[in-house]
Figure 1 (cartoon, rainbow, N blue to C red):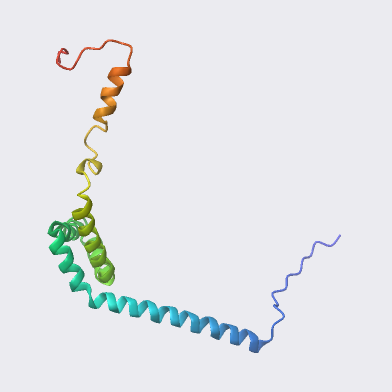
Figure 2: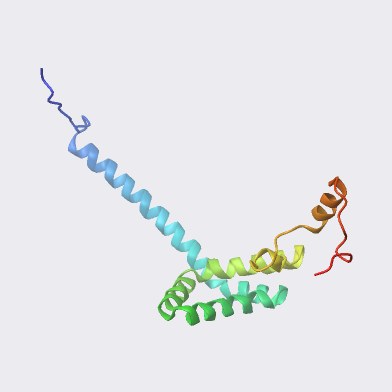
Length: 147
């Protein structure tokens, strides 16, 4: 009984074919990185425009973002420094995101703060009224109850 397995990684291609394929792949990656860098550079040049748009549409978005960076320094100085470095590396995308967020807040209104606060009771007032109507038990209203 022979349990020996043999694996071959030979593709059947010559060395020149492998070399040409590798070079084509390398050139493709270079073109992708070049296009990505040019897009980044273009966005970097219009970063002041994004900041200006965000400040015109909803200034609180920009100030809240700056306060968030300051809060990260208060919590952990090293983490805040890392967070600031990531913000500077991604500055064109961050400012474009701030401009979009300011536009969305202006167009659709700001998201309710209750979503982010965890200290409040999570109930929906209209559902509570619906439950009171459906419930077969007669309950005392909140005014009739004594604490």
